[in-house]
Image (cartoon, rainbow, N blue to C red):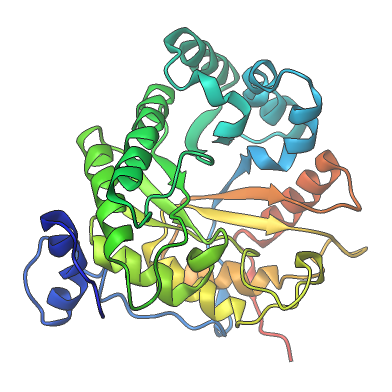
Length: 328
């Protein structure tokens, strides 16, 4: 792996994966870098039980159309509990972009969640710069931009923020990304939070590249948020003509997962997701030993947002504790 270190921090983090391969004691949690890779073709057996959360992007049309997304965001916990019967939320910073340092707003939002008995899990962060930018000043500025969201997540009682890692890295070159992500992960660790990376376009949607970054950083609080649908496609995204084996990709990302994003698009008359083999995916999730929340992220166009959310919820609830049988 050509890491081309540009700072002491980048050197130390960037060489971590190689050191781990040699069995050096570098303070990593056992099994993180040596975790047995799962298979994307799991055998029959029970699917574990899990709880369901709601990713706020599932309602992005509603909240953007409200005219005041920050005000609408205050109602997200209530909407989640009363409309969908879900008890945990995953925020998106786009709806309260200027509120990261607004203590009164965050206190109000947290209180509203508490009043509904709704747990705040994470904030998905967009638009705060590239953590892998080749220019050190811009990369460091992106780190600083994200810190306020770490603090906001802490105020809301979340366990993580989801970041976009930028486009300046690959499976063989991760030095700049390791430098930026390590700095942010170190800050988050100081307040007891995680930094998690979704497969969210660019190199992050290539398992080889994202895993190289995860291993390069090598910190317990730096992991993945596997999304079931965000993988490279040959054509328009809605055609779901994936260029890689997405089940293998999910399996490879799961050993580092601190959350799971249950992307959904459309359903048949029996309630099955048309484009994704949900029983297979949830067996992969189970085989990884994951028992945290599974976050609904509906992005379809045929069903309304509420209909899509409820269809996804019904499907996930039907699979929790069920028995998986491979097709064919």
